[in-house]
Image (cartoon, rainbow, N blue to C red; front, side):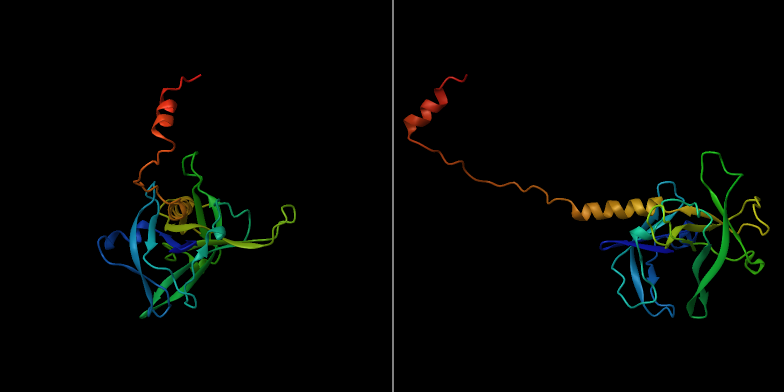
Amino acid sequence: MTLVRNADKVIGATDPELLRAHVGAQLAVATMLDGSVGVPVGHWGLSRNASLALIELAAPIEPGLDVRPLELGAVSGSLDTRGAPAALVGVARHGAGFVRSYVPVLVDQDVTAPANTAARLASPIDPAHVGAAVAGASLFAWFPPNPALGRAGEVLVLGIAQPYRGFSKPREHPAIAEVIGLDDLGRALLIAHRIEEREPELVQVAGEIEARGTPAERDARRTKPRP
């Protein structure tokens, strides 16, 4: 999954099919590749269009571990790689622990998708990666500097990979994943942050209003004609 932090909130996004078999189970996110350290999952659910599983951690991830959440600024609002080098980066089981996986890909629009969608397909560059298991992997792109905008080069995460079961073949090698954008993950982080930073609720205060002046002066104020 992709873990993103905004202030003290850490929310992850992954393929819902990876969690469907674990409904009701107490889950944890491994934060060391040997599986020795994990952070409990507070709760999880589906995004608005059910294309992502959104997971909120019950505690922050301590520094110095193999897993470090991205900052919200490292999440791209678009699935367009703009021709930049891209790869699906994930984690795979290896014995009792885990290893990182890295699959360089080319990303194209799915021409078989409805015209009002922005579905993207990831095709492996190396034929050795054809058929690779990449469910839940993160699509990263390495963008070069943009002198026109005064921006340095940056590495951004664009979306989450889900197994592609269609028949479109935009490149030499068959597509291995459909990439789902992270709009709902960013929205969930912003909402959670706003809730934490909202102003304190008003508290009712009981008390008496102090009367000023003599009784005659108070009566005069009550009976004085208003303009």
